[in-house]
Amino acid sequence: MTPVTADNVTRYELIGLDARISGANNKSQNRIKGLITAETRNTLTISCGKKEKTVAKESASFIFNLGDTSVEVEGKTLIGRPEDRVKKKPKKDW
Image 1 (cartoon, rainbow, N blue to C red):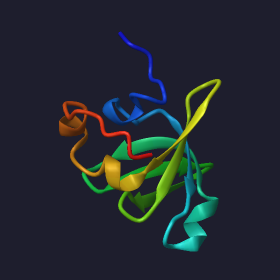
Image 2 (image 1 turned 90 degrees about the vertical axis):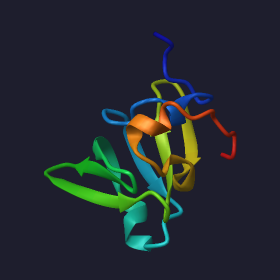
Image 3 (image 1 turned 120 degrees about the vertical axis):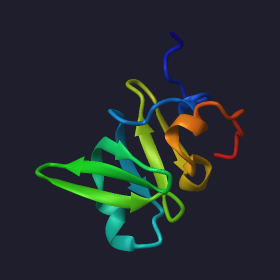
Image 4 (image 1 turned 135 degrees about the horizontal axis):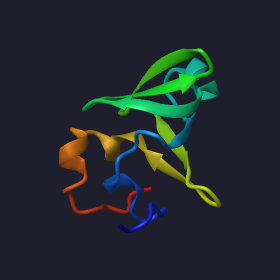
């Protein structure tokens, strides 16, 4: 299996990745960081300590920690059902 890299992160399962919100329309969401615990067509749920926060993909950018590197991805490129998104051809808009 190919490891998750900056080039293919949008085609992989996001649950379990460390993420941080950047550039959200709702400025209070810019402080959210933690482990992605759930994903729907339009949202990501991030576990922040004892709380879980749900963030709309369309209104934020996400920084994913991939071990030794980090990659920032526009949430708009992540919109769609997770099972369909992994089948799409990648667009390098980030």
